[in-house]
Image 1 (cartoon, helix red, strand yellow):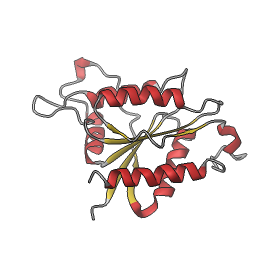
Image 2 (image 1 turned 120 degrees about the horizontal axis):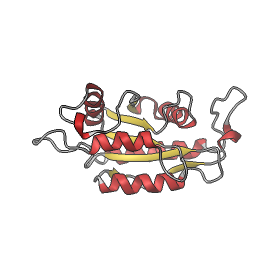
Image 3 (image 1 turned 90 degrees about the horizontal axis):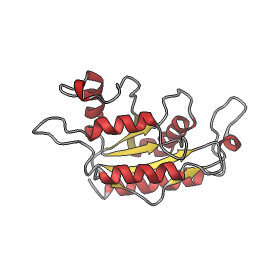
Length: 186
């Protein structure tokens, strides 16, 4: 059986962001069932058609990582009831055709979405907006279960590290579901 490759895209560039920590928790939950990698994309420039062709090396690298993944797992914070600008910029680059012969690379790519937030609303609104965008781009979205974790500070230790308590079983459930979702598409 083929080894599944999951690429995690975190919608925050902050090194110790709650969502980056959540992605690392997901990596632990996935364990040896799949290769799980976090996408590093801090070097992606703002989309500008003046530099689109040929694409900058950082964009080529990110596209190659997305193309080689069997599934994308988004971990998004919520900024002003929306997902972040850095995530939108990345998706804009990924949504562009690579050349006249090669279309955009997100079409048909399976996706899952999670998020953690310090406020009571979790990241539900941001996730809904993200689903609208990636569905438009023809990604194969696993809508159930999605994971929205509110009140992050209740699951952070005194060192600022995420220590999932009540939310851990929900992360396990989503990880199991995403593995099954991907297996059904290989």
